[in-house]
Image (tube, rainbow, N blue to C red; front, side):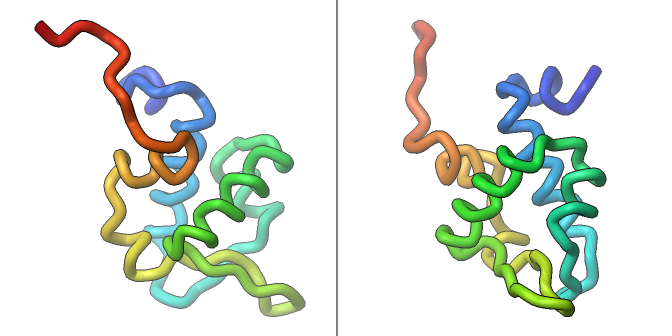
Length: 100
């Protein structure tokens, strides 16, 4: 069973979670370039770029350009839940099935 099937979210959500788990596994302050991150989480480059921009805007990760650049997770990103990550990408979560 894949992560996407296990947590019951669409594939883009699963790639987002994989990217955050990967970044969280790095030592604090260590950066990872986009191309290596894309390969590590098996995500299309255009999709991953857009997701990472949203995560930067939400204050969960930081990016730096240049030779020593890349993406690094911030303390808020290390504390983020899957629900927070999904809201950053998808907007507010809403139930779409009957609960009662």
